[in-house]
Image (cartoon, rainbow, N blue to C red; front, side):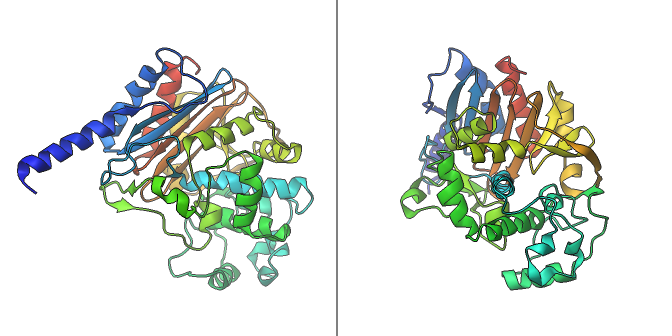
Length: 388
């Protein structure tokens, strides 16, 4: 490619990255809202070289979506209302909802032992680990990821059989994909169904999430955004053991707003599903300023940015942190901010909402970028909107 042509292509891509696509929203945004969002998102995208982002906002009973940049730097296709993003560990909140539903409907009890539902693990250390421990990262030291050498469920069970806890269950929080993955597996087994089928044929439809998938249909791959590593290398998620339970969902900003609204009792949802969603907001452990719910993490509202950054820090994510059990557990309350981050190799996401105020925000990006930048951007947008 000639140098002048190459420069022209790069210049065009830069324009596309910073160009906001026409907002695809249920409601027409108020005057100035688009500018307020853009003041935060444009510099963020430029700083980290993010090709595309979608920002969803719920405020004053209405929801809005703002789309920026492109699905792929190769095609230049703009981000739109039907663009699918990987949401990484935010998928865990859906797994928690399914487990909560199994609890609400009497298929299991969160106080049950994990080995009760996996016969091959009886007389193992999982005789001492409860389903609640699995859903709150307090099992006793399960690793962050499924070990690379494990390629199937038989190998996974063999690993679990020989696993030895580092801590007494319930005393330390160690963030873990295998932990929530096992909970999702057990929830599905308790309902005598396949996990992916339960999600795609029961949970997502119950919430009206028509553009949310674990297995993306061929008809929707056209708008499955291309992800990019921090170094700009194109990448998409590769399914592995426990992928669907821990990090496998692809969705749109609009669908994620539906999930946020369901978490704030703003949708007409089947009562059992609504009870299950609400129950995931119960606080079980205190880790610093953060309260660990069933996967969700919450803070007393109003909350300072420093507290959110501390609760979403690499120390909380990658290290073992002392956990103080809340006895009795803290019942779901409206005056809290609830949040969760999610990442894959090529995507980054963040969601936060305040049930009492019925405000929420979703950030989806097709490039991996730091968690503290996501949290700060979401906080700044809420400040701009005058709802913090």
